[in-house]
Length: 458
Image (cartoon, rainbow, N blue to C red; front, side, top):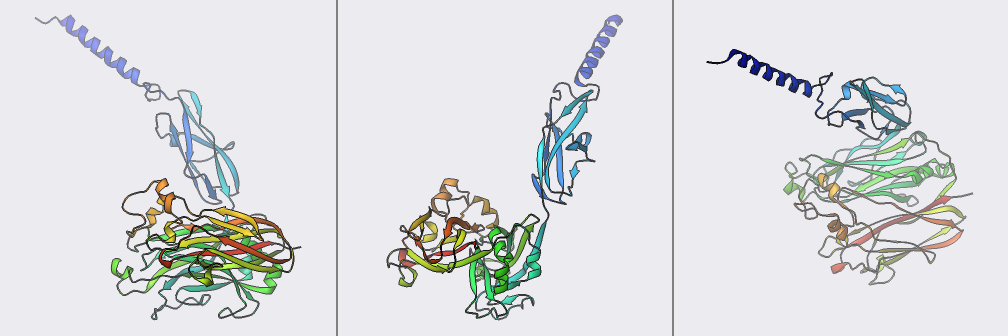
């Protein structure tokens, strides 16, 4: 016969154990004490944003639990509402979070967010369509655009545009895929046309290349269908702001982007018989900042000149990759800088674009620089190379593999190299470019260089 007292005793023991378990697993706030809270941490969606954009903060405890909604967030000493901060003034802001738990106040790490001045955007080209050279049935361009050819367009930079630019300047380019699914060179020039004269067929205009990029292998039916490029061109702003140059010249921006659709017509659905190669936009982007002007001058040395050892017009010494360019300066140039762009091309087996060649630059017989272009990983640009190609292949390459042969990456910019020349005195001067290891297998390919000098005048 079951003992009723024993049954009651066992029941009370089980109830007591249950109460101990529940009490031990919960604190006064209903949180776990098995893994007690020891610290909290704050993070931001971005480190730097322009004025007017939103920083969004997240607060976690050491258990990786999101406690943002029950925390307080301070910008400096000011409590904000919620977890979103939209600053109205540029500067650096300190951000910290606090959280109260079991009457204990926890303070997070402090993070810094940077607020950049709101930039002025001046649009130059708005989705201009480029075509193969011989295409005839093409769309007209807007009235403010000069169509030089199916692959080249230009636009005048007005005084109103220049007035909107401040102390710094970026050139942003966006290229959308059309029906050329190969990697092509794109060039952007600042063009100086004698004031009041026509742009087209003007023998007196001066063109300096200020930016160069390579398009990726893009299939327009696959996302992403475009690529963005950005260049720092503060020195170009100084030219645009110079009073004496503005009196002497009208300024234009030009862009040439050659392409073919013969392969795209076969490989890209919807491109059968199409002649559109790429669509492109260009913007000047200028953050508000202080600007102090000094009188400027410039001298063109080379524009997209193809050095070739196998052609006597493209080298100083047949069989060698060496070329000199001469200028004459009427006045001394203070704080002179050499701006230099180079990229190797030639897709044949053993071609120049697959081999990294050391460049040697000298000015008036004195060494200026030696460097080997490329050598960076192209993996970050794999995402925009949506058309299958032999450069990327089916699987990622290591940094070492890319560095062994990459002169440039499809989808990336070609660097603008800047070298100090000090004071360049009035008179004749020579820039010499030597690339002794270049081979130009089967007499193919070229090394395309652009160079100009810019500096201050008294």
